[in-house]
Length: 381
Ligand code: MG
Image 1 (cartoon, rainbow, N blue to C red):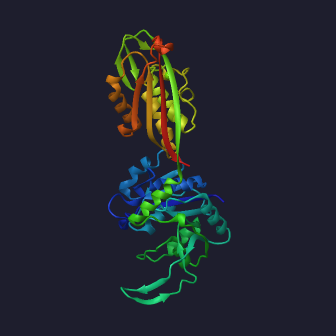
Image 2 (cartoon, protein in one colour):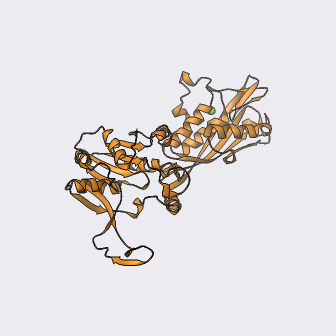
Image 3 (cartoon, rainbow, N blue to C red):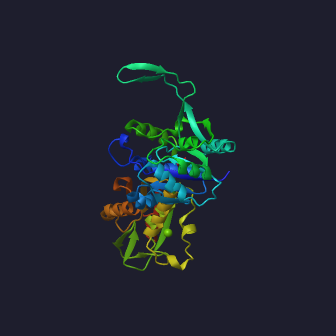
């Protein structure tokens, strides 16, 4: 069944303690909002409408960079108003399925969505729910009653509906009242809402401790990958060489189609290698006139963007330059700073080293310069 989704992230989440509203906090290096949107897109959502506070609209582009299939709209003053703003922005036909999801439940996955859509075949709505494992008490300081938990369920999101039924139900909801979830709006309008098996992984991040637990869970869903790159360029006429984004005076230049920055080329290949995304020659063919004399920082930036597009982040990089001359050491800090700036990572996570081959081989004869690089990248599993 085709479906769209509305992700509600307009609330401030005051119970979560000080700091950014929870949808904007980071989990495993990515905004929580991104986890939710990615989960729904990879489960097959045709469109995800993200509802945020009006003053956060500009931030969404950054949080969801590299993802396709989402739109963002400004929310209202209540959750119900925000959901309705999201529903209004859907482009799919009115009888399609729509999932309404709280951004603060980052671990939504395909299996959850499939169970809901299957249940929606025989109901107007479907929600994931888990049994109540704890004994329930009523009281205020002292217990006044023990409440039977028979037939009680804890409702989670995403909640699935026929788009047109939910819209119609919202139109009949009494003004001034605030529903605690979307299913209750449909229930009040007489709709049948199916209960499907919920999942502890659909936990809602509410209190500061929830974020600590979620970090542990997020860690288990990410992997570390390593890539390596090698590049060599021949010395030729000239009075300076570009190395690791820094121009160094020398009695020769380096020959190449672009600026021949061996260090950045090796590093670009290392990063592309870590995410299994081809090599620099594939992304920037040397036959293409656009890259003639090009500054190699754009190649490196492109590789970093490819990592970000997968929800990954660069952990650290290490470049080794192999040459007798020019001397690298005086320029090493400038090179590290330049690479850190291009990759937007702290300089402590960038290493640049140099060595010679003691006069042996092409680097020893000073015919050319060799660069090797490794990069460690962390991505969703
Ligand atoms: Mg090269």
